[in-house]
Image (cartoon, rainbow, N blue to C red; front, side, top):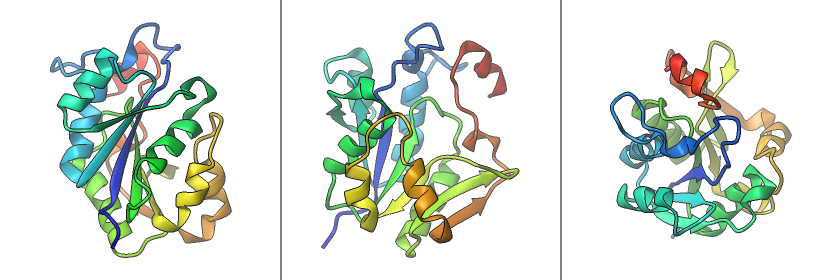
Length: 191
């Protein structure tokens, strides 16, 4: 029997465009950006992992306190794909994965729950879409585990999604948070 759907929070990026430790940057309510994203993921997904560059960092400690299992990615500098691979390899028994980004703290819990529910109902790949733009998080069924574990570079799972576009389920949403990625301080104004 497989484990439940597992959330993977990608938190190993360098955040160089932000100009500071982006993932620990406090939001308006004082919560660090990555912690806010972790809490939303944790409220919607039964089992969660945070992939970080350094398991001993302040970020790793805060994400652990938020209830996520910490998985270090020694290849973090090689790109997002390596972090996805690390997270999936740490949970190979999962029924599927919900891949979320630590710099997207505005995704509503209800949208994440809809992605999980879609996987539980048999969706192959599932993602929200806002005004024609595919957003996050993206859910993958267990059959994609081997391909996800082979990922490298900074393209993430785009190639897997493109190769299986015919089995991509899109969830229409009015929630702009699914496409708001905080890449630089100016992006905070979009929240």
